[in-house]
Length: 294
Image: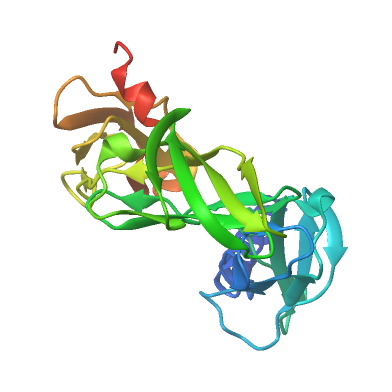
């Protein structure tokens, strides 16, 4: 009877391993929300169109759902705001779902990163880059006026201080510097019905990132004996570094005092629980945070 119990347990273990080997569920992929027509910053009454996709799995069998500030909007690939209203400003995300041949028969993507849509009800709107720029790139700020009247002059402000007064609506930065990251706004004066009119835009923050080296992880030997000690080094020129194990943080970020940040992580590994992929990545913070004491 004792032998029979051992045999049953052994068969059960083999069945578990076999089921893991035949797991039909594909690895998770992430959805992506993009502005496909119009601009993410627009006047009320204008149109913008957003498209959802799953770039890492271009299968035609995806169906999509759109969310506004976390609330379900519609099950459609392309979501449009026609004659947008101010109340429709906010964060838009999407996710995809498709069928698979075996249980659980459907699989969902990871939700997309938020797509920030700003619908302005005023007369003047500052057009800024949609994504953060990197130093030495070119940046253009545009002071827009509703209905595109004849412009007289434009004043650009940086951190509430007048930066430049000019005739044109575009302010071009040829080679960005970290110091160009700031809060910008503009005041426009235009002629309408033979009268001068003037108004100012809402302030907007523009982010400028530094060029950093790709972090490199040094784990020593690729294969280790169960119970042995392993040391990881995350080597990069940056301010903060974090280790992750299976996408879960292993310890708190570490602030570097020197140009080369080397963080060491020592722990004991067991074969069944701790064998995995470990990687490191950079944490970017607001430029003003870099001046704080370590």
